[in-house]
Amino acid sequence: MTLRERAIRKATRRLIPFLFLIYVVAYLDRVNVSFAQLQLEDDLGFSDTIFGLGAGIFSLGYVIFGVPSNLALERFGARRWLAGIMIVWGLLSASMLLIESAASFYVLRFLLGVAEAGFFPGIILFLTWWFPESERTRVLALFLTAISVAYVAGGPLSGGLLELDGLAGLEGWQWLFLMEGLPALALGAVTLRYLDERPEDARWLEPEERELLAAEVASERELKEVVGVGSLRASLRNGQVWLLSLIYFLIIGAAFGLTFFVPDLVQDRTGFTDFEVGALAALPYGVATVAMLVVARRAEEAPSRRPYLIVAVLVGAAGCVLTAYAQSPVLLTVAITMSAVGLLSAIPVFWAYPTAFLTGSAAAAGIALIAAIGNLGGFAGPAFTGISEDQTGGFEMPLTVLAATLVVGSALVLLARERGVPEPEPAAA
Image (tube, rainbow, N blue to C red; front, side):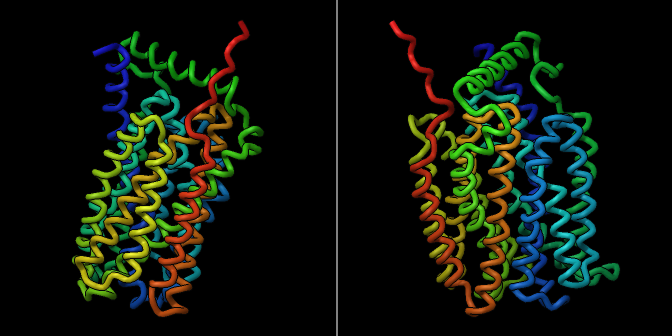
């Protein structure tokens, strides 16, 4: 094993499992409202429109505060900033047990989005400080499997917590928010002691390993500053940043527009109990976890990432259409699995694009901007699905429209810059 391979392996083993764990908790706190919906409709009289707006309004807070939060992380350091974010969002997530009306639902979901705005883009930025571009798709996939694992673990867990309905005078959905919000508080405290800012700060690496990682990442950063996008202003004026933002908007809009309503859709079409719905929802994301790793590995080794991203998005589109019309439990499971495999496999391949050509303040701002606009889709998708379902009486029309937006997104990938920075012009003979 070479010195480089040893250093990369140590960094992966040290950082990725912990980042994976905290993102599982973060994502579960973001989407557990989809399982709470199974009781909120009855206990508080929430319609699909109210639920869709409340689920999606999280993303508005994310959009407004995403860029400032990531710039603050670059200035103050990932360790302190991420820990603070986790503690605040844990408190807010647990506070969701206090909602009494649509207004309080909207306010707390918005504040949760504000608190978490810098978390995901902050971790993406943090990984660019540690791993060279050639390793990033694989590392991102390992980290982002937290999304699917959050559903695998969160489905049965959330369904089980809903079964505590009436215990100690609390409704099932109140137990869900309370018990799934508390782990973020503990992990926030651990983050302060566990994370190192950059390779040169890592005492768990040998001196030559620290030097190698720091030098390779610094060398890539210097090249990007010459031929890539390295300033804040350049990032915000860069057409590729805005193109990638639009693509991510379409992917996340469809993903959240479907995901937040899967438990309700499954229960409506199958009559399953809350726990059975959670268990069924876990299966597709177990398959998606494996698919993310396989697709990421193949995309990283291939001459071009583009075909993998396009095919993944189109598989997600096909899954959305099938989910719209499937009625039996078996066909629903197949359809949701297709959607999860396609949309989740697309995400790590997608994030290899912006991290390849952004550096410095441009990376902090550009990554946050793409994540923020993408999460604007996280508002538009659920809001559109909820309103359309109330108006049409079914999920067929909204899910078909979401599938169509994914087809548009796959076409836009053709315009995205393929690899990192362009090659420097050869010197004149």
